[in-house]
Amino acid sequence: MSGTLYGVGVGPGNPEDLTIRALNTIKKCDLVAIPTKDKEQSHAYRIIKQAWPEIDKKEVLCLPFPMIKDKETLEAHYEELLLQVLDLLDKGKNVAFLTIGDPTVYSTYLALHKRIRREGHPAQIVSGIPSFCAVAATLQIGLSEKEQEVHIIPASYQGEDALSYSGTKIFMKSGRTLKGFIENLEKWEKNHPCEIYAVSNCGMQDEVCYDGVEELVKNKEMMPYLTTVIVKEGNKER
Image (tube, rainbow, N blue to C red; front, side, top):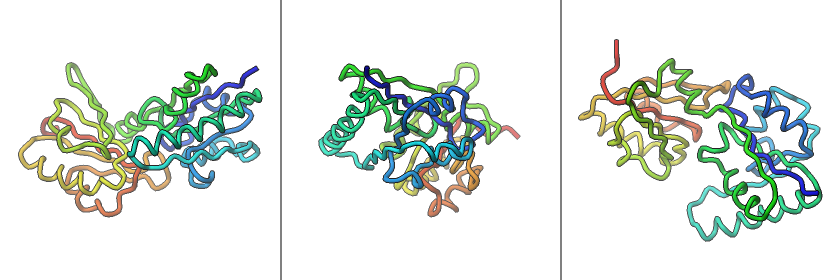
């Protein structure tokens, strides 16, 4: 009997945001998988450990995903990871793949999920609190009201053109492109009334909030990969 692969969203960073369903899924699985070289590098693993220290007793499968955009190289790497997971599932093992935030939003897990199901094995998604929802709650702002649109954008792939979208723009996982994106945002903001916010490492001990493009510009050299930038149309209500 085949095992099942679970893509488990653990929330953005605060262990109290971990859902009961997610924790119960992890507990019942034979081992956990993480998209890093070791568990100490995994934000998702550290979140679980704070909520349930017994995770250290679980077997850990490290499935590092390269941070590259070359499709051919990525495809070859995904196939290697697929074989490792298929071997475990064929042995009847249930695997919980941990992912920060929610597995359906720009998650490395999706690459495995689609391939596992294509091979005829069961794979399920366990939703987690998306980072951008937690960011908005931390900032005490709404993302949309009435007819406002919301756009979720991977900032490492695009940014400048997306600033012209209507409504609220959410730029996620900016990575190494964050500095350049903030510079473009500073230029764009001069001619476009808007509210600009950002949160780095939402829900974690080193969480930092930013209000206004000036704060982003001042701190652009030190903002980490897990930074979400929110741009809302219109002037801020005072």
